[in-house]
Amino acid sequence: MSELVRVERHGSTCIVRLQREQKLNAISAELERQLCAALERPELQAAACVIVAGGARAFSAGADLGELHGRTPAQVADYYRATGDFTERVAELPQPTFSAISGWCLGAGLELALATDFRIAEQSAIFGLPEVGIGIVPSSGGTHRLVRLLGVARAKELILLRERVTAAEAHRLGLVTEVVGDGDAVTAALAHCERLAALPRLAVQLAGQVIDAAAEASRLAALELERLAYMALSQASPADSAAADVTSGVER
Picture 1 (cartoon, rainbow, N blue to C red):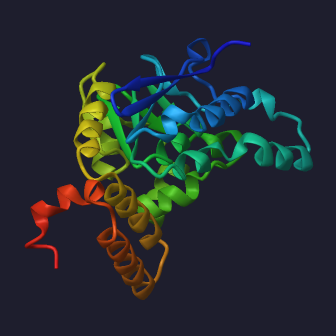
Picture 2 (tube, rainbow, N blue to C red):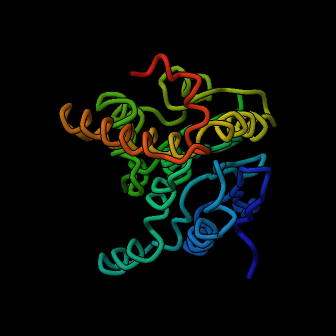
């Protein structure tokens, strides 16, 4: 069986690289299975940051639709119970996550990118959610994450009106974090990871989790989460808290 997902260690960062390039990294059930297995590897669990990357031609051109063609609703439900929640497994990683995007980033590929915290796009990257045009809908968290990230109107625009979006347009819309030169996405993501790795790890992870929860919580619940996180960090070990000394006279 070919290796469709490779894990590379770069210092305290792990790069999870899709490598089904002959199919433009189309997301098959086997690729999903290997991706989910990669997320459980000890070196990735111990990493300070995680980067998801594809190849030069495509981050991922979308789902391998041939695998789902003709399945009954029950069979589709079984698929989602097995590996179809791969984007959720990426989103649940506690450490900061980046997508390094080159080439095509379409359909399920874009939904995978949306499951990461940050998206670094090369200037020639192309984005889109073409599902409705072929009679289906985004089904790996794309509708929910787009609404949360961009709002209802922008989500409808991207899913119903826009066939393709350039990297520059995606940045203007807020879909991507940063646009860099072609070939530079992984390098740029690694630079961000290096800076994050120098910060107290527990504070970084809790800040990200509190922000994610706040997006769907009431104001009072979000305030309570902030305070609980602060209280937990105040009891952290000196090694975890060392960098907090810089702001000890400010954050009160």
